[in-house]
Amino acid sequence: MRIDTFCGETNWKKLAAHAERAEAIGFDGFAIPEITGDPFIHAAMACNATERIQARTAIAVAFPRSPMVVASQSWAIQVNSGGRFAVGLGTQVKGHNERRFSTPWKAPRSRMVEYVKALRAIWRCWELGEPLDHRGDHYHFTLMTPEFTPPKSHLPMTPVYVAAVRPKMIESAASIADGLRLHGFCTKKYLQEVVMPAIDRGLEASGRSRSEIDICGGGFIMTGPDEEAVAKNREWVRYRVAFYGSTRTYEPVMALHGWNDLAAKLHQMSKTGQWKKMAAEVPDEVLDEFGVYTTYDGLPKAIEARFGGVSDTVELGFEEDTDTDFARDILEGVRNIKASFREPHAHYADAS
Image: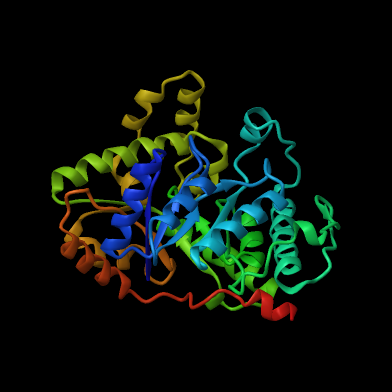
C-alpha cells in the first residue's frame, strides 16, 4: 500500500519544510488541496524542496481551467521534478462552478472524461510530435506551433487522478483515469457495495485491469500519539460528517445506510445556518462507519481492516514532534498491506 500525507499549508516556506519532513519520514506522496491557494504552485514548491516524494494536486478544480493551461502547468512540474508529479482533478459542484468561478456547468461526467482525453492529446503532441487534433463535444484543440511546443520530456506521461463520489462519476473516472480519488465521506459499506462495482464497470468499459488504476482514500484516518489526541481528531471528523451529510451531493452514502432522516435534519440545519450545532446530531455509530480512529501504533492493523482489498493509497499524518524513526516504522507496517495497483498505463507507448 502507498501512503500519502495531506498538506493544506499556503505559506511557501512552511510548505517546503512540510514537504522535506514528509520525504524524510518516508511518505510516498504529498497531496495538495485547492482551498485558499493554487495547488499547482504549491506542488512545484514541494517538488523543488524534495528529491523522491511525488506531489499531486488533491484536487484542482478542473472546469474553470482550460485543459491547455493544466497541461502546461503539469508538464512544467513533471519535467522539473524529474517525473514526480500527478495531477488530481475534480468537478466541484454546480454552485461553486457557476457562482464562485463563473464557469458554465454542463454534463460534468462526459466533460471530465473529455478533459482527460484532451490533456493526453496535448501531451502526446509535445512528447511524440503527433498533430494536435482533439475535437470533442466540450473542447477543441487543433493548433500547436513549434514556438509553443516544449522540448520532449523523456519522462512518463503525468498520471491523471479524478475525484468522484457518485456511482456514475466513479464509473466514468475508472474508465479513463490513472487514479481514482475517493472522498473521505465514504463508509466501508459504500466502498464495497457502490464504489467497487462502479470501478469494475468503468475498467471493463476501457479494457483495463484493476492493477492499472490507483484507488486513493475512501474514508478518514484520524490518529495521534495517544487516546486524547485521537478523541480530539474524532470530533473533527464528526463535524465533517455533519457538514458533508447536509449536502445533496453526498446523499447516496447516507441513503445506503438508511440515514435519510439524519440527512434531512442536517440539510435543514444547514439552510438555517446552524453549522456549529450540526455535529452534535451525528451519533457515534454513524461516525464509526466513516473511518479509522486509532493511535499511531494501531494504524497498520486498523488500516488493513478498513481499507485492505479496496484502497491502494491512503492518507495520514503525524504530529510535528513525532520521532522520525518511529514514524518510518509505522509507515512500513502500512506499506506492507497488499494493494492491487501496480503501475499506470503506458500512454505514450500506446501512441507510438
